[in-house]
Image (cartoon, rainbow over all chains, first blue to last red; front, side, top):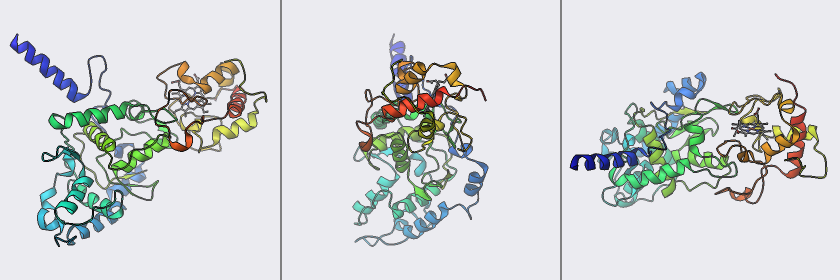
Amino acid sequence: MRAALTLAALGAVLCGALGASAQEPDPTPRPPISGYDYMARATQELQDDDFVNPGFFAIDRGRRLWSEPAGASGAACADCHGAEGEGLVGAAARLPAVDPQTGALMNLEGHINDCRESRMNAEPYVYESEDLLALTAYVSHLSRGVPVAVAVDGPAAPFFEQGRALFFERRGQLDLSCTQCHDARAGQMLRGDRISQGHVNGFPIYRLKWFAMGSRHRMFEWCNTSLRAEPFAPGSPEYLALELYVAWRGNGLPIETPAVRR
Amino acid sequence: MPEPLTAEPGNPERGRLVVRDLGAASCLICHAMPIPEEPDHGDIGPPLHGVGARFTPAELRQRLVDPKAIDPDTVMPSYYQLEGLRDVLGRFVGRTIYTAQQIEDVVAYLATLTEDP
């Protein structure tokens, strides 16, 4: 009896964590396939060669910022986390995550700005600014090859559920949800774009369409606006929760930053 | 949906221009069409070659106005529908994707597509 109850409870927890009930199977494609595999060969080649990959301009800028003293503290990232970023290898693969002190869900951008404000006495960067993109690119690149492994249980569970709900919500004048393209139709052609599974293991990416780097939240914003839906703000609680859900879908994929996408 | 939405009959040449307009949720995002001057037709829905022979104008009008009446789970957008949408981007609030006249023009154009590829 006791064992049966425990099993039932475990089942409920597992279903919650996986975001699927018995009637509604989880449609996430398994194993996950990186957006890289959906790109044309020429785009893959741009990503493969560190000397031509345009994302490395951002990484070089990030490396400079890394060791530049900032704010009233006069400290640089490198002072705490290592001259070559040794202390943060693997960090990007585990984010977003719930901060145990505050209970807030934080992504890499949030951590960088939190360090600036609370430890360096520096102004936080504006989301999507060149400097924040450069530092997130640099720090993510430190984890290149490390498998994405975000936690969605425990304190992360409510954020995960919020993100999952957003992923399945039909929005905008075109009335489409993320899942309709990225779970059900990956590989099909939306005009000239091959639909990918919508993973975020390569971010920030250099996007050819933008001629620029962009964050995960910029991509969400772009997708929402393309569906003629009101986007959430970059850094908003909604996009943070969505980022957690989307990162979880790609758990196990290696971090690729800086990825190049169409 | 047998009744036209407008008094003015649909104009197939105008309809062909309407469906090509890439700024306006073009059918080409999802469908291949006999419009060879546009590259990169999508393959989310079936090719539209021959739809004029397979469907009546009334059926085509229904399909454009509100395909969810045919299949609630379809990914094809409703081109003349304001109900049941959420979080519509500000500049599109209260507007349908196509005007009534554009619907009629596109129906008239689709009716000319009587040949299979």
